[in-house]
Amino acid sequence: MTKSTLLITASAVILATATAYGPAMAESFPPIKNSTVKTECGECHMAFFAEMLPRQSWLNILNDLSNHFGEDASIAPDPLKEIIAFHTSRASDVSKTRGARKWRKGLKKGQVPERITTAPRFIRKHKDKDFKWMWKKYKVTSKADCVACHKMANKGLFDDD
Amino acid sequence: MKPHNKTIAIASIVILFGGISSSMVAANSTRNAIIKDFASQAGVPLSADRGKALFESRAGGGKPDTPSCTTCHGASAMSTGKTRAGKQIEPMAVSKTPVRFTELKKVKKWFRRNCKSVLGRECTPQEKGDFLTFMSSQ
Image (cartoon, rainbow over all chains, first blue to last red):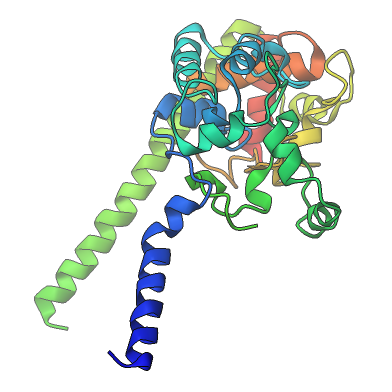
């Protein structure tokens, strides 16, 4: 094998690997298929991924929806039960997915973030000065509006930053 | 285009538009039934003007972040709004968003939530009926 074929082969292998593993390397969450979660959570904001917060955070949030960060977001008992089951079974300290593992990293023992934007991973990933500029550029009115910058956030892909 | 193909094309268009207009008729009749129900509960004739005033009012009593319907829905019924979490809200006006107020469950849910958020209480059947009468006229 000549030097150049070796180089070409090596590049091809690297490229193929990058393509094949690209999405897996990204911070990806399993897409939400539950229609109750998609509708009920997704009407005011993107349906956030349960893997972003520990179980207790979800219990606190979902059991206090009539005062949901300043708004009445109360849900009828049956869909609420379904949503709680969905979130607590996929929480960052419960799920074995890559996304969950990343989001529970940095949580202090017993730490229960009030919301996603106060979770250690969110803070760590958005602390640079650049973000102030980006938030302005994309006219982000709320940090809850993931899709303002992460265009594929709805599909669980956040690796476009 | 062969003549029979042309006939098929025209027939398809007729069926398509027929389908659209009949679904709109169905939507309108469902909405009207919802409004009629509020009217009978209210016991007084409904008013689009009162509905407009309610939409625009800043009566207070609710949560500080949502002093008026217009906080999230935009200045007028025709406006595109934005939730506090940044998600776009289609205009409330039926002429702009024809599927508005055609699902009773959804209508009940959002009146329950938003009346509490904005006014700090449930809305009366008259207020709900006025509101829907106004939005249907827009």
